[in-house]
Length: 102
Length: 471
Image (tube, rainbow over all chains, first blue to last red; front, side, top):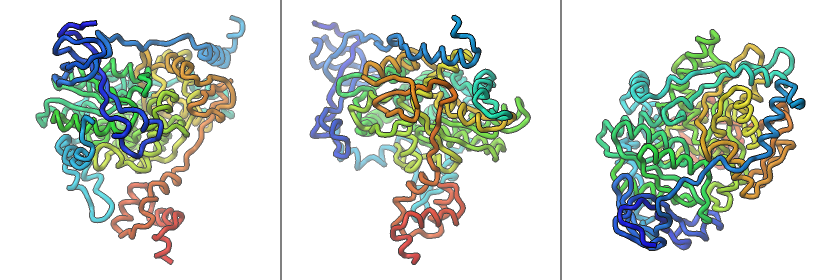
């Protein structure tokens, strides 16, 4: 997929490969690369998952692999959590005493 | 490799010095210590200046409110005549939604005054949004460096929300995978951009919180006719506690007991790629609280201004499930929807209040904003998706990273004391084989808030060369 110049994208870059990481870290961390993600505007048109350059919000030019075009915010309030509902019932019952009747 | 580790490590002190314009050498004593108060006053900003800067920045003067329903709830589990009045300083009312704006206001003010074009902060927490918001007002650029993703590219929802907040204020957010190499990228960015290092641990980062302690002392006096008996601070990097305690003293509240509180994350390694998403608190936990207390200078400046052992009277930990429980209670009994991490101190205060007298005052000195990702609902939903078991039971049996245990009743919330003497000894370990001069000992007495006799006893308990020489 070709993405137009000027499009807002998210890129990823490996800053350190596993063998370049500092030595004092836990083994599970040491065996994976140290990665970075940054958002910005594409300076030239680019393919998704290909190397490209962006200009960031502070005007820095950074290169990396294009991971996402017009990235959306994916965090949310999540799924229903039954335990919170139970906690709420405990609190209201202990405080006001009549929640069991509802 | 995209940066030169050896080169950056070698130039670390120069880069940091240029980025905060503080010559830390000026405060060094002969021997092991440094002049803390000299460093704190080196900025030339008076306490009144700090207050004025915050006022001009839309920061501070947050309301102190009595939590009458939570107090009543706590008294249901107290002996007759017990159950202190619980008050909360609603810091979520600050610009950007947390007390961190107080720290950011001063750092950004100084950066602007010194002519920097931008500011950088390494933080996955509320401080990022605070710096971004204050920088936006000052017309400065901002870069926030976050530890955010594990190697599966899965991020903590709480940190994603903070990234969104930073971006909403126009900041650039640099997101990294798990690992202490964050500091190298941070140095690289400081070096390349020449921006100001808005360190949480500079004198500015701590002076900004002194107003919080000062305000709450004054407000408690107006509302109740006396200073509070106890103030509970959520403790991570130590700045919140340090600044609050200093502010209380400035106001004259010298007898107020300063209590630290952290979420217990024992057993989870902070630099572990696999543990990263197995926790449900990204700050306010023991993974920061304990190491920063016993070794404050492990921060991003040569001498940290956050030195909690100078002020801490007691330290308690609490399990994740109890903090979520109290976060829900704050919402359904008091109508405050606030972020869980900031409620760590509330959960501890709820328990401590039960063993205090009815006419005593216990203050919870912060709240933080809440939103998608950064709320007990998504955080528990995320825990479930990472195969963390959620259950009701004995809260002391919670195993961080494996399960989250909620109490069956608010009366079953438990706290665990960390001995402050144990922390002091841990702090002293690196000096156990050092020949300490009187000046060094004087410094250590200040650092650990103990008289000389007690210091000698703590050192003696550690054994080592110190003890052998004495014999």
